[in-house]
Image (cartoon, rainbow, N blue to C red; front, side, top):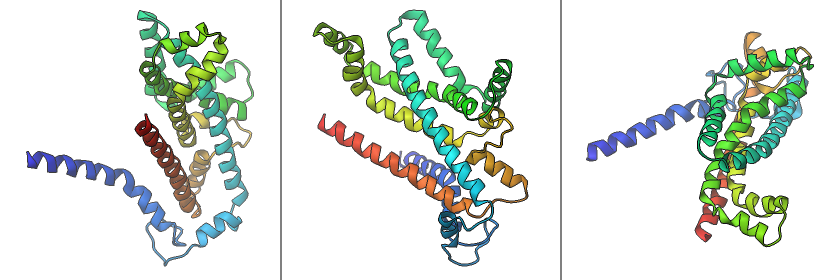
Length: 267
């Protein structure tokens, strides 16, 4: 029994090392000025200074890519959270085969390879004669983010008392009032989780963005890094940028998890 426990713990620690070692590696080498990753030339915070002061090559292009990435991710996550929550409520109130069918259809985009989604949306936008740019990228990101919100909200619907909504209607609330004052507060944890997951998925996306951004020069962080790598190397300031993004996402997750654990203790 002890051997199995030790093996299980060793496996978990090995998995954690494999997952987080690359991030730690980048964070460590963000404190040196070496252009090539893995070459330590002494401790320095100049890369961070260059990142915040713009004292680097193509600083405007990198800043523009970061701004585009954040704006697209926020817009897509907000729209996907709204659409996904409404879709989850609709699916939950269906019965039998209709509910099973829609749940199955909702899962397909999450399993579908990104490149297929990107090419499909590209062909759709061309067929509809929609000019590619911010609009098409945001619509594309909403498309693949919404199923994740549905997946996060459905369990919260299953956990809540199904009679609460009807009780609110019986007490004189309109359907919209019951939705925003009864359902939304109960579904808020799932909505927040769906928003964060959608935001992260949008930040991380490359294939769908690459096929739907058009030729107007719109770059997100992923497409910028791709183009930068094709030129023969990565901009050194990307190392501190990646480190800061990881720390920001980690901080948000920690705050949300702490708040949820406190709320569950109070309940």
